[in-house]
Image (cartoon, helix red, strand yellow):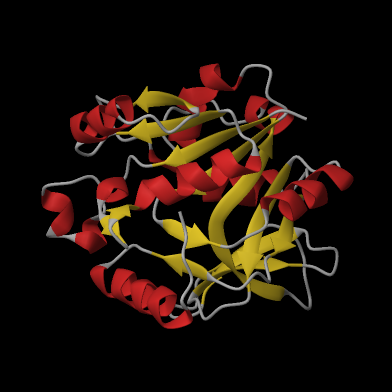
Length: 246
């Protein structure tokens, strides 16, 4: 099974201002290196040979960085120069780079985790899934809801009480989204005809007819580096635990 990687790096990083006033979020330093380096290296170590990175905010800086550094893996840039297409639209625009791929491993640029890609892909393939989301038991206000078969049935914001239901589910299991997911080639073909859309909206609609599965990640750590405070918290964890990541 051929897997292509995609790193979503086009966002504005508003929670990381003022740092993102000068840099794209993906180039903000974490433990001395741009955060995108860790995602690229993790995908490379897994055996992925081609990684697609979408860009928009401070696009010139990230294009220059990716062009000038040899990561030892093929890097393709999907340039959203004219308009930020959101997560779903960004993936759809990059489709030309996914030819001959069985699955796409999509990863937000600002996520650092120890999720086991081998176990994740095996779960996805063993169940012949079209879409599998990596999820985790964590203290999130916004959660995905799953049934006993770990099929996505809805979404909920615990702070506001907003609920979006895709399927009937009397006893939902709630998990926080890892920002990491696998898309089959078939699922890509069934993306909506619109140019700009959220991939979460797509998940919630798609699962009504084709189960979107949840893979529960119980690995040691997961961090969202989307704010200065969260970066500091993650850096403190790695230093305290003596964990080195490349």
